[in-house]
Amino acid sequence: MSLKKILKQLNIFAQCRHYGLSLWQCPQFLFIVMGILIGLTSIISFAIGTRYIADPSFVAFIVLLLSAFLFVIAFLVIRSFEKLAEANRMKSEFVSIVSHQLRSPLSNLRWALELLMSGRLGKIEEKQTEYFKILKENAARMRELISDLLIVSRIETATLPQKNEEFSLKNLAEKVLEGFEAFARASNVEIKFEAEKDLPLVFADPSQIRQVLENLVDNAIRYIHGRGEVEIKIKKRNKSLYFEIKDTGVGIPKEDRKYIFQKFFRSENVLKHQTQGSGLGLFIAKSIIERSGGRIGFRSEEEKGSTFWFSLPLAH
Image (cartoon, rainbow, N blue to C red):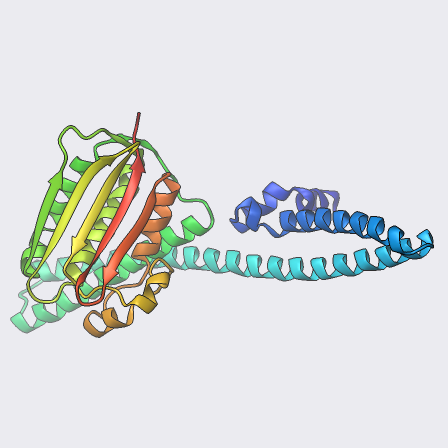
């Protein structure tokens, strides 16, 4: 092994960045921590042993054996963690590469469909238009999934760019709701929006917070069956701004609530009513809010609806 590779292995921070893990999750750092703990254990064991065993050399021999055994166990455990971290890194890298590669052909498919549907290449029969619409809808769903996978990959590898700035959460929410007006009407859902006057600005990445809002509003409307209502409130709480969205949808079963922010998780009752969805939206929302210095949570009751909320730090 070359000197450069050895130095790279010894650089804990570089290894953590390589795996896309925080310091306390990094195998190399954990090995050092375990080494320190084993050292302290050896010292304490020697001190205790000398009180009960007359021969110090025998005590030292026992302590050395114990330390060697613990180091071997620690090394094997850390190596296992390292292999898992490397597998996780390769998985994220694979998802990122595949997602990037799929974006171009999907974009070409979208433009080709739009050109065909425009009629510029010839007359389109009504039956053909129906099939083209199905293709377009499925292409859009695939595009959304690929976009979510790319974001998840960047979150896991700590490469998601974050451009924080001051902005109005109220104004951003109003723009997002404008884009959902048609979807809400088609779903027989009434949206009520209420915000306190003279709300202060928040400090975060507006494009990422927009995605959080879109995910929460989309879920709230999508999981209401029949006529329903979505209530959205924004208010100031201490040194943060509080956003709340309440729906009258299917709710979340008690046994599923602890998994709700996990990747790819979708509740059983949701799958009965709604087959679309990747199960990535809430994972992305939680990651973005926590990266922004805020908190996120929910309350829910099955068949009565859910209330999701998050808070963001104020700009000043």
